[in-house]
Image (cartoon, rainbow over all chains, first blue to last red; front, side, top):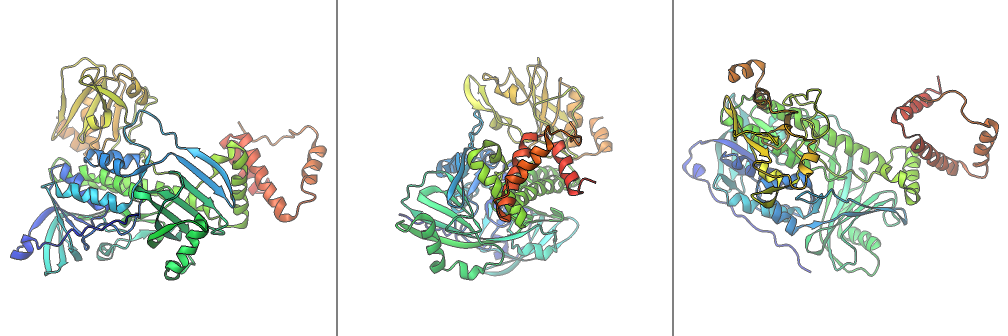
Length: 545
Length: 64
């Protein structure tokens, strides 16, 4: 049995602090967790230099986020990290649901075939962060500054001024834009006075990593009201290196200091795993949260992402997975504004789209919590009824809610979408992330999403043209013709996109559908591209002229 | 489809007796548990979301 050795990244005095020069950076990211590290990589991938500040100099202590879903893996693949994560992590498909002392039922995720990445992997957050840090270090556009603690932030019209404390004292730096992703207990939030809207519920969990030589299969096991933890829920997940993660729901009234004492934790785990089980308790923590989100994801020159902006219950793995998608949405917009290709108004769509997604996550999280922790006696009867019926009858299994696993929220109401005309049916609606599919490229098997890339892209099915690019104003899109540049050998690409000859899609730089047509319409594409870059009607007319 | 609020059970007295008799030997807790299972079974059989919403609204206002 091995324990993880936490790396120390080491503090280095920056040149600007040494020389006492106040330097203005295009982008400063606060917090080197999974979201901040992803932010640095995505902004750098779009050609922007990034300074990343973190008040510590190591990775996450304990496994924390654990579960990573397919869409974040697709984003990390765009940033060149997903393969290493999948290789290091554990994939699972089977879940078992227990009610009191019996199994209620089991399910198989049976993910749709013809996708490059699995539906879900489990990986300790420290392994994930270590991979991301290595990728950041290899990127000359990213400067990682450890032991840099932000102590104040002041905003001006076109920049923010940051006072930063290091082992060498306090110095001042400026940023055109700040991405704040330093978590639920952020100091930045207090500095900018960013408030939360409402509070849906709050709860506490005891979360533990244990190393064991166990016979447990690689499955997700969820207990409702088990004999070893009466009246609450318990979740067991396998992670890399024979480390298992156990989440005990405690309820808001539990005493966190008392509950995390090993004398209290070890008997709990022993009761769960069996009296004879051999295990080592590697890490234990209390996760407490209030399910809520911030009023506005942008405040002037500061943009909020991840747990800083929204917090949900752990059911459904909606925390880190959502945060990574915040960055996927933000990075291309910020890069376009910095390049002068879009106005600051585009950044307001970051709030519009990601607050919409946060609300969807809060809705799902609230529903799961209402099922797992019934609030009234009668709702407990319904919960128990669903679990009892699920043991014998398939119909009740979809009613059982132990957390709905994170999937991307379509931005169905976004102002960046160009609405479909009436002839367009089926396929992928504007505001939805692009589904992957196998393709053939230069006679070899390949995947659609990596080929789609990270810029505006037009994909047209089976049209006859020599064009390879469509340009309007400061924007341009690569034109991919299916049948010319790539082959849809399996037919899955056309099937997933509801495409026939002439069907044309416009994808945004985050691989979301901006618009689509039944035929190739260059003027329509140009207008939709300008709309997706946040240009209003007057601006679109001027730029298209 | 709309919620059927006209008589639709062929032998209403017999049905009502069966429902009451099925809970005669249950205590209140057991009966409430059974009711919850029965609601879920019937709701699934109906399936139609619009009808279920109508039924929930109708039941909540005591049928008024």
